[in-house]
Length: 210
Image (cartoon, rainbow, N blue to C red; front, side, top):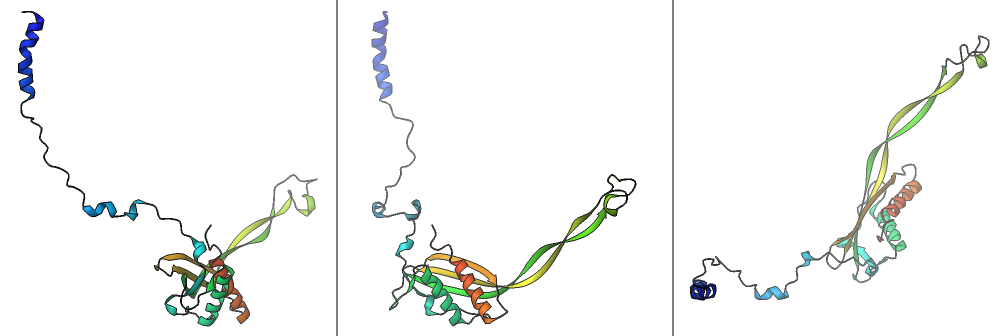
């Protein structure tokens, strides 16, 4: 039988086989998306937008309470120092409770260990080259000199630690938090006031962040 006739004879059998049932059947199907999916915004899928610190212009105390003081400064003194520091950063006290920021502050005294290294000088006698059997400068058998011996001394100091927290008044989210310390200034009231303002200035030195 010619080759073309053989192909024509087998063609109906091939077509019949293609029209048979498919052995591969899907076990299931994906359920349709809910109707509200098109209108739902997933905030976790996007990075948080940068915070606009320029819109914060006024502040008030959080929960309407003055900060807690300590033996070094009473609450009124601490509140006055914080208010002055915020003013230097362009933040003014809010009027009629319409504040952009809520502020809390805390003051406490803590102890720190400090170390200093002193150097004591002790004479030593080296074995250099003698001049005529007698060492130069009156030292026998060589040159004379001095060696430095480090001595580490540890002592305890008292420091003043100030912590300041700023919150968004609209949603209560934290905006800024920092703490700083300085000497307690226990020698005189003027020294304590200076140490307090120094700590507050350090805590707010990075606000607003660049």
